[in-house]
Length: 217
Image (cartoon, rainbow, N blue to C red; front, side, top):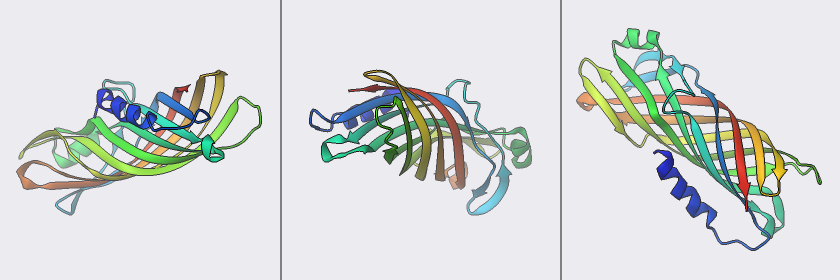
């Protein structure tokens, strides 16, 4: 799921009818994303405790886009609902490929994650600083890339469910523009098919420090 697919989703979300007092925001972000080791099973049997590298700034880069609806018109201006798409990436390290004998193993044209989230921003009066936290759940669609002696897999698949948690702070630089920095974590349960009729399962936690910009309307 590339950016060209994510933008229409967010555009639809941003089009939710709202009164003139409602605040909507469209955000774009990138940053540094990593992932700790995780067990990799094939057909339910562990094959390796995989090490992962994020390589956030290598093509295709790590990025995300988010649409947020703050519930002003319901008398809850500090509560929001957000639809968030992130193009995460994980590459297996050299030790992992050496242990498995696989020449290629990664989810790098996206460990694509789409979540629906609840956000809360802490009221600070007229301050331009806006700390916030959020939690949510959704799905992951990884681009499965496995090359091993028995065959090759190179395709998008539905992986399973994902959870999200985030905390950050935004700063209003102009009436319609915010800059923000945040920590965001996603936990994804991945169960996909690979060559020879086998199935591959792993649970991946991605951690990201994001820098972004929001347009409010």
